[in-house]
Length: 369
Image 1 (spheres, helix red, strand yellow):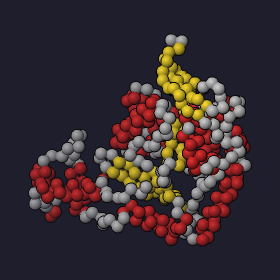
Image 2: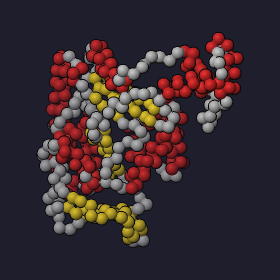
Image 3: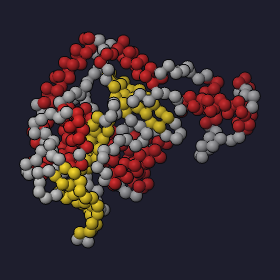
Image 4: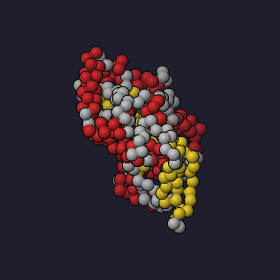
């Protein structure tokens, strides 16, 4: 299913156009590529989009994490590398960081939004999860002598009201340093343009929050994209570097663990991003460590050819409701087609099918988080 067809189908199912920010999330999380490779992924994509829209429409102030049963876990392990590789990686990072420090947009954001400060981890987390920062502009605060990095605000009221014959959503903030509260509102039937800000979550996860266009945090989204277009960084790394000056921890082999869990299967994968100058021994160590972390000593022997063929035979007989014919009938048909690999009865074939299904579609891997 090509991208245009996916967008048209989602529009028909949702009864509304797919917002541009939703489409950017689908592209960033590789749903669009999934649909191109396998059109059967569409029901899960539609569910994910509906969850995104529900979260966005609810206007909750808390940031949201991914909803499709997937989290990316990105690892950087300096112990993998030789002294020469570590030295080269650190030298490259320092070079990239120095170049980025001189970027005029970075300098302006740090001056206007951070008052030329660098935030601690806790301060940076508070900055990106603050509802005022995701809704209001930097200019509004600066014109009133306030800095987004130090401004203290709280939501005092939220709801809907009618004005000029139209229903409007509104939220009111009390802001330290301002005598009067600040109320932001927009028509209830109109969604404000928005974008998605990524930032480091708990452990090694990547969290994100939807932010209004031209807000303090939207400015940060624009800058992070600019930096990622110039340097081999991820958006969440660029965001954290702008705020804290720490990282991005850029190593020549980056490991990513991906999970996707549905009722029909559990999928986990390891992705390695490798710089071309890294030795093959380092690459092997990186993969072995990642594999060991997921397997934890579990049986990883291949399934026999006979059992795989029997499994494929059964899968070919699944109907549109994912139901199989009676096992006795399947065993009889199999035995006629493969007399050398006969099954004693339908129960024996069912056991093999269930065992292989569990091994392939529901592997007992450890959660790497």
